[in-house]
Image 1 (spheres, rainbow, N blue to C red):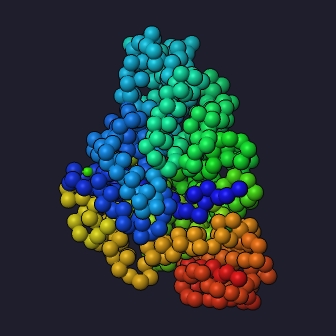
Image 2 (image 1 turned 30 degrees about the horizontal axis):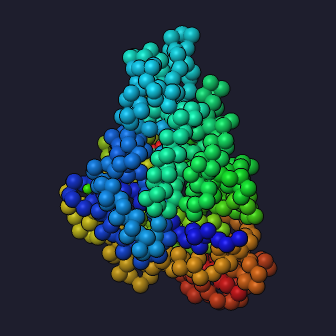
Image 3 (image 1 turned 90 degrees about the horizontal axis):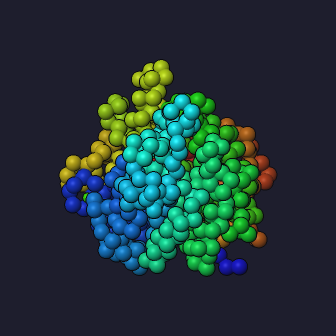
Length: 543
Ligand code: TEU
Ligand code: CA
């Protein structure tokens, strides 16, 4: 069986609102992306995951879609979108659309007709329930963004379900007429020449709310199989499902080859392993490398023979990679490279989140007034009510708020980091004069050049795409290492994930002498005996 087109490719995620503004309204847009395509083709990525650009009232920055077949005016037009698909393709980059179908916007025509009218043809596209016995909501189900998930519709005397903001009513996936509309819409995008779909919270579509089951529900896999039959089968579309509930035990039920569902999954165990049991991301745990490695190694092993991993440190919902897992101070550049090195040489498809390729950091916000993200603002209110101190909440938000990844892309040291000539919808991080694409790319040893090299390595070396993964030194507190083997080739990867110098005995299974494929500190042709690694030193040697 030949490899799919994306097997040796790296993806790049664009959050359009924050990438490049072209008309001075302070909001990134499609013409802005078109103007920056060189940056991406220079990096060598094979596809772009575009966060939603559809028509939307922007209650959740586009994850609330009011028309799946049109583009939000602030982002551009369908013509711009067609141009992006075509110009991307000319440069060897396909466009992966964000498919948000757990819910629509409350301004979608389906919901506007359904609200207040039990007889509307699209009423049953959504989840309606009578009040509970006490006249209140039918259950105590909570929204992912805080507060109740049920919302009262005065006009029809029923509650509707919205698992995110109240402006994002959940679709009723048990309704075949609703599903048929979605397949139509997906086929319409397929015909426009896109490269695939990233599927928003796809693990929620099989929910059984009356049983209190939201994620990984009873009809999930039936729906995915139907989607495959109706849209995906026979096409070369890349699919990547977002599934916060996925575990190594159930992952193959989505991505197993004979399942006829999805190809790859975004799972989040390496992220949530660092969250507090009750306060979640607002009270992060101390970073632990053995915990991180445990998760990554388990996933490498779970999908070693079947399925395929999606590899990432960051996205538009998460903090910046170098701020979470690296050292954003003294060792920013080297630790950014080290994180790239150890992730990109694993088995799976790596994703680069915009700005990661130049080592962008968290936003550095210190007051609640600086945040725009609906999740952060809702949880601020909720956590204050629950007695968390403001200082503690702000410390948690500085680490984990979604706005950390949403500050504008830092292109230059000029006004607003070159993102806009107007007033940016969210100000750039204060360090943009120092950290920006122009400055990074003008250095011979910048983060961008290193990432470009990693992306190219994957295309050149089948062992990086297909090689068997074996973890080494699993319990080591500072070192992440593994080997990849394929037929005659063997790759040893070792990284010091700390700002200290580390001396260790190289275990025999890691020992190697060969060609240095990539390194963050100094050239090495061999690993054996006693080795001292500089802070954030990483090296990959091929034999
Ligand atoms: O995210 C799903 C999701 O569960 C996150 O919102 C998550 O709860 C949170 O970020 C972690 O603290 C997807 C999109 O990626 C996100 O941007 C949307 O807001 C959400 O779905 C609703 O569409
Ligand atoms: Ca704009």
